Length: 142
Image 1: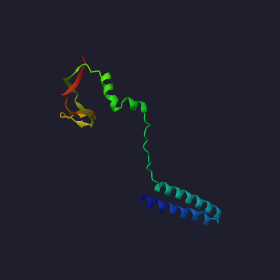
Image 2: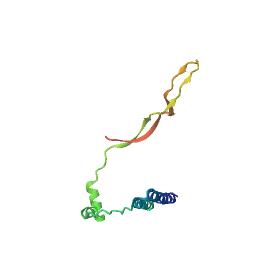
Image 3: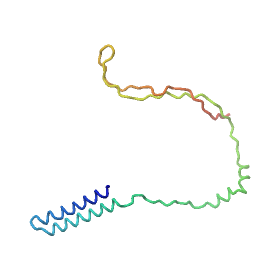
Image 4: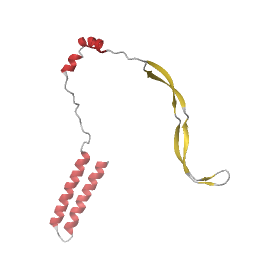
């Protein structure tokens, strides 16, 4: 739909702007140059609309690191794991963690209270979710 509207608008501008100066005072050269400029501008707009904006990016494959590949080869991996394995010292423990309540800030417009007095509008905090305890696994080091 945009392409049709753009093409009709460009065509209309070419016709109107190229013929208007040629009729006034018979300045045909100005009309010709103006019409040519409008035609070039219109073609640029049409080509920009019809152009595919998606940019195709090729996938980059990083070069192989042969030294790293040899070090972690299947035949060497078992011995590497035995030499560099360090057990972590500590244990998992379940703890209760407090999750704070969630409030939402909303505008409370001006109003009359129960006693009939005017209260100015202000922002107030409204409770969305109450606070609660949550059980989490925590790593405890010795």
